[in-house]
Image (cartoon, rainbow, N blue to C red; front, side, top):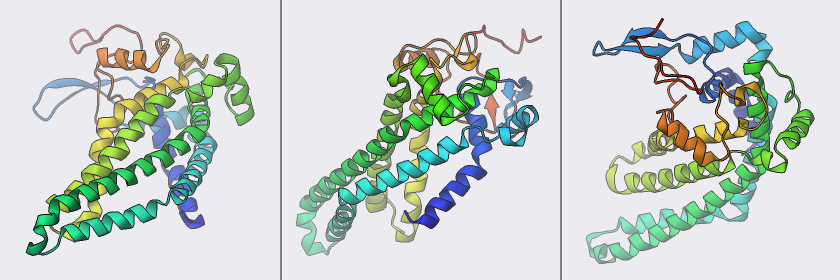
Length: 310
C-alpha cells in the first residue's frame, strides 16, 4: 500500500469514526437512549432503539466534538501498523506469484473442446493454488492481527470510558499501566481468539466463494470485479458474532463501569460470553445501525415487553 493509500485510509477512518464509536458502545450493551414503539412493514408492534446517527448526536451532546473521537489515535495506529505488517508478509510469502499461477490455471481450464479431458486436472491444480494463496493470506493477516491487537484493546477501553466517565485509559502509556494492573500481560490480547476465528472464516469463505462464483457462475467478466465485495458483505454477517464477542472481551475485566454488572456480566472466557449472548438472542447486537429492533436487555436486567412497558 502506497503512502497516498495509507493517507486516504486514515482519512476514511477519521471521517466515519463517530459512527464506529457509536456502534462500539452498542456492541458492549450501552443503550442510554430510550426505545420507542413502532411497527414493522406488516403492522406488527415492536420496540426499537434510535438509529446510530441519533446515538452519535447523543455522544456529541455529552462529550462535545472531540469526544466523538475517543480512541481514534489507537485505531489509526493499529490500522497503519497492521497494513504495513500484512503487506510485508504478503511480499515475503510471494503471494503475487500464487495469484498469477491461479490466473494461469483458470485460463487453462477455459480451453477448447479438445482440452475438456484435462478439466479435472486443471480444477485440481487451481484448487491447490487457491488453497496455497488463501493460506498465505491467512498467515499474513493473522500476524498483523496479533501484532496490533494490543492497540485495539487500548482503543476499546478508551471508548468504553464513556459509560462511566472514567479517564484511566486516556493515553497509550496510562492504558498500558491499567491493563497490566487489572489483567496482567494477557489483558493486551483479550478477545484475540474470536477475532482471529472471525477473520479466518471471513477470509477463507470470501476467497473460495469469490473464485467459484467468478469461474463457474458469473458469465459477464466485467461483473466479476464486484463479486468479492458482494460476497464479503454476506460473509461479514455470518462471521459477525465473532466480532461482537471479541469487542466485548476487549473491555471485560478492565475495571470500568461498562464492564461491571449490571452493565455487563463478568465473563471469564470468550466462549462463556458467546453462550450468554446466544441465550438472550444478542449475537447480532450492533449489526444493524439504522433499524435497531429491541430484542431484550443488553446487561443483566429483566426482560421488558410492549405490554408491561411503563
